[in-house]
Image: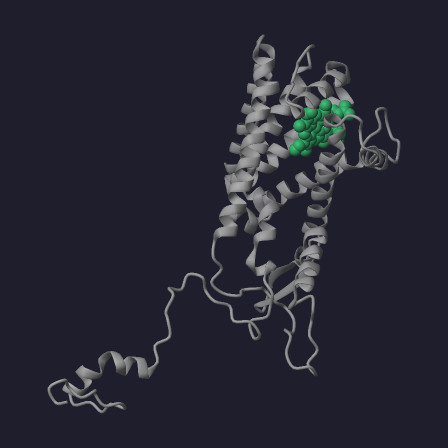
Length: 340
Ligand code: HEM
């Protein structure tokens, strides 16, 4: 039901974009207005979420460790599993972000007769997650050729490497196969794995279907409906959007408006969705804190400011009442004026 709804939602978005591209005058709304709204929502939302996370006090040092923390000199410290300095934290974080290290250690639990439970290595999720994320990153970087004039050498180089096999005309990009395979696996896993299906929500399926539709519309545009789109005019519009002088002079093709509208929806939805793990991973206290709580006192910023109150100070404050109640005091009360 939830995944069917995601499909319906994306189909509705495609129909809206297609209809919009057919109505005279609406091209500006879909080609200029929506992209600007989406950029504002993306940037504004992204910054807002990061600021909210940054402002949230972290009450304890809660780094996740899975190795020996720094201790006495003769006990071997595991620097990557229980990082103790900023450099070690950065090293672990870099491996996590660039290679999805914790996902690589994913295990799969299975019940056997006995009953006996076994934990087996499970690398498929890691593999397809890597394929999907790197394909997505390279596609986005390659798209910079639409927005930048002249196109930087690095972007042209990526374009060349991605089409290295020179299959087809225009050349098929490896990342196009990668993004489709990656998204398809991640989606199929949610459907076929009953445990994952049980915990999956509409917000888990929708971004996958949306990304799939973006990839398919891009692939259609490049390889199958090439004559329907005017790449030069699209580049003119893209550069115009960046330089705040957008123009649409010719018919850009319905498939382009569909592709662009879906990207706008993704951008606007991004900061409010699980996709924010892109920024969130840097803000996660379990990853970005140092395992140094034996050395440095971590003060909970939520604590009220309580000043120290010594016994001497306490007695000074209550001496009179203590004497009156017959309690022993360390310092006698000063003699009264009339006694002097
Ligand atoms: C999340 C962002 C985006 C994703 C994931 C995406 C994905 C794709 C994919 C997979 C293709 C197939 C060919 C290729 O890999 O280059 C493609 C093509 C294309 N995309 Fe995108 N796209 C995105 C954003 C955009 C934007 C903002 C524009 C607006 C300029 C755009 C315009 C195009 C065009 C014109 C093509 C055809 C390219 C060609 O014929 O070589 N895309 N897109």
